[in-house]
Image (tube, rainbow, N blue to C red):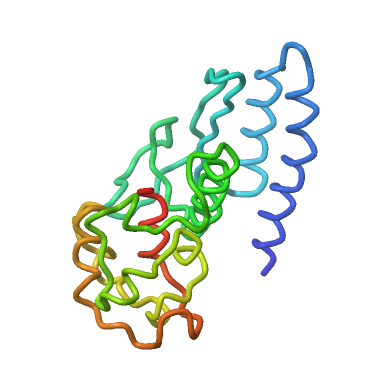
Length: 192
């Protein structure tokens, strides 16, 4: 629990520091670099990477600390290209990206998924025919919590293959009738 507070305080510190740094005409990236290096040591963080994009240009990117010792990332130092698992934070990014497309008039929450992903199917033809973009984000397509996760977790299937295979997984609940926390539907939203 104590380490959770350490990470939370680091994040809160960054949230207060970032606006001040970015509001300057010329940000002091050396000061930011020093701040992060000190925080990695002080909070005993294993590793992190940061990138700052301003006006569509990467103005700062750097890795700090060590990579995971697991087989996926291997040993070594973190750099600006080290991948990190961000878990369900990607759901917020997917929802925000779709909302931006809606705001720009490029799609509607009420668009049929089939209009954007013509090959996407649920096990139920009726549910597939009714499936709207908003349904992908509401966890109510008829699958139970985590149904379909074994289609991607621990496999080397590409996104398209995971979405192709979801059609073979029977719906456990009536369409839009109950909540079932989903990852695969957000993958479909990301593809849109």
